[in-house]
Image (spheres, rainbow, N blue to C red):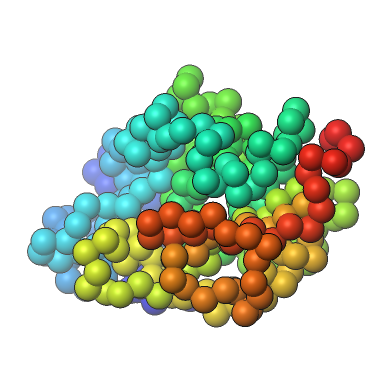
Length: 271
């Protein structure tokens, strides 16, 4: 259940209005008239569509700009071009250097806005994204839809499949034949509300979906499912999930990747 009081905003554009009406019905949210967000006090945030795509926007005077999924421009484009390729810690953590010609199937069980999944897809991984928040699902669907039409990133996002729903349930039901090579977890961790480094989307996400009380269970299920390893993204000083120490860590200035190895990717038979 959403912790924020949300609505979907209509539009004077007939096509957008129809999409927003269907979205409001699907999400079970009220549809409000197109109006200035700074004067909309009845709701904490609204979903609305502009030329840039679907966005989740806090209301009220001085609210920050919308949070949306953008795989084409902005930080996603910069990282795709200049992020360091397979030398990035996330690539090392999932084992791309050991994969050779094998295309790793990575299950991102806590997809959020899909940014890490997009990085891994751009490096050649086949990604399955699980996201349980229906509102975040809507943002992901919109971002993927727009990216498919872009000639530079279309081939990348075609390697990304969204599986809406609860990660524990989906992982428990996955067929043995399609077990992921790697399960990637980035569970919501409580952020200090006044910390300058906390981005607007993290503050908004925490208010929208709350923390992940089942994070320890996610690790247990992931370890039972993955073929080769489980990777957990954590703040640098955060405790280990389920109190379970990883085989090794890759640490950065503010975050780290905990790597739980189950079998050797390098020594596995080619896929």
